Image (cartoon, rainbow, N blue to C red; front, side):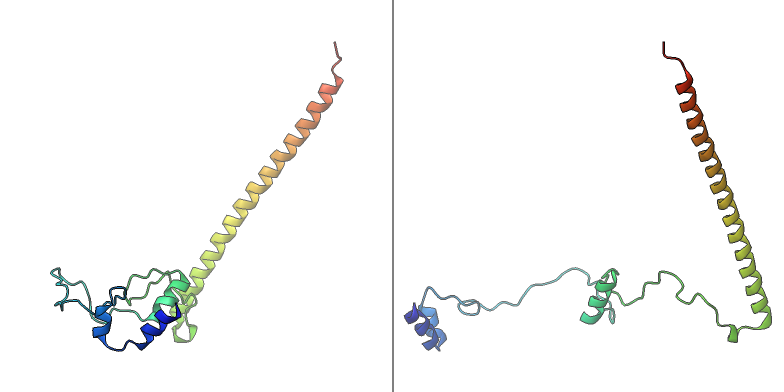
Length: 143
């Protein structure tokens, strides 16, 4: 085995490689070709490729690797408006909208609290009924 490795190390010329049938390299004994012809319309758009860093970041964030550079917005990132750039009428409108939202959420909370209380009352009634039923069954004489 060591003689075969030494033989391979000593070979420098492609002619010597061609003579040996047990050694095959991809570039020797092949006719030159012009390559493949692509006859379909190219869908490549200029300046739309992503770098490897962008591909890895998108993969890490779970975003699709669609190959375009257009950002995907999942919603407004700036939830709070800048009050310094708003005039008084915009601030008043924002205050009214926030107050309406607060009132709506409070009414929803009140409705949910009422449903919870009704459910607790029904549960208590069922518990009392089960206790009464147990007492009645115990009172019956065994015949």
